[in-house]
Image (cartoon, rainbow, N blue to C red; front, side, top):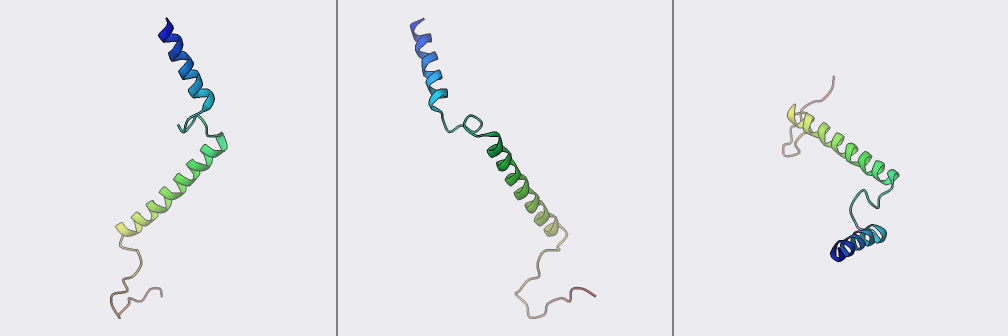
Length: 71
């Protein structure tokens, strides 16, 4: 019984003092902001991957003869 009480006090102290676990000390606005940043980064990476897949990324600067782009 005594060890259960000590464990409960330690757990209570952890929640009162706080820890660096995400979700326990972050506010709703901070979590939403972090999610928006992650979605924004993933979207930009997806566009880069799509362009790489279709070979539409930037021209190479290793040659003097650049392909004509546009009409």
